[in-house]
Image: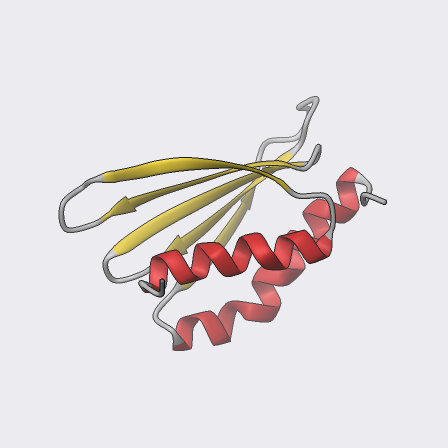
Length: 106
């Protein structure tokens, strides 16, 4: 069963706050920003900043998500990944994937 829109975005924000220190220890800084109010499908932008890579996960309340990344030194844009996030468990997987990509873990 999927979470409500507010629950999903709140879970994402809480994940960032819970993991901020552990990600920083791996060289990944986290940031989160909520899209302006009044949109039909509210969203968050979650940024993952590492030494060599930057990534942004755009997460919509509908559960749709796009992960985009760039290599800092070359400016190369990595292929975007479109994802579906139905609940907090799926958030763990998606966020783990983003942190690993930015930290350079394969």
